Length: 292
Image: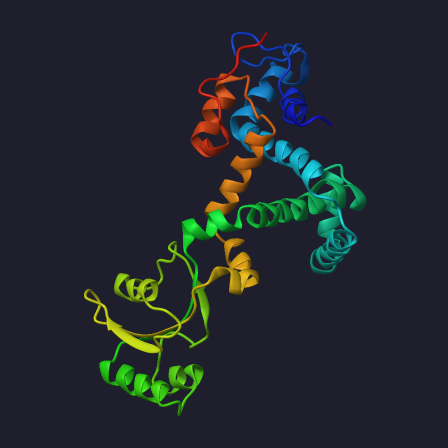
């Protein structure tokens, strides 16, 4: 499938018969059901569905088409999908079978239409991170550091002394002196808002040759004992990549990148406005495109 047509197909599945940049069903007046004197038409159902789920459904369908092109389905993905299906069957039993039946799905279609596309979407983020690693490092400045957080200055000083002379490991010092953190090294990016600004400033300015240092929060009075373990992202690429995978903003960047790559366009003003509110990053056009 040519890349410039991939997303257009996703939209055409939902939008039929455009006029004045507004989608309309050709057979909108067709009756679906009657309740007493009330008639429900296809147009009524379309309006409700488009209002409540149109934007999310378009994003979901377009993402499936993109991942089908960008990400190969591997044996590991199929094994993972099968494992997830078996887990759901074990946990939910008959209620899961009823869910599939009510949704008009078989176990196979659930795997193919939901579980595997979800795994492909995860892999798409991984692919974006791999391709954009240097730019993401420049933006998020990942640093690996060990941070011990104390409410007591005496405990912080005792821990710092034990760490500097090597009589305790970070984990031991954290437990012995009642640190709020475990003493396990972690990757910290500029997105981190767990620690005080003073602690983050120390992490940003220190190097792994500086050893253990301490800093006190000017607002809470908490004391942080910190050692930078590594600030060369290429030396800890796997760990940094894993951390990037949990940054929500990078998920958004992935979607925006590939939607732009495949020429995502919207031909309906209501859908455009809904996407502008919920997913503005995927809209590369200024206004909806009028039907030709």
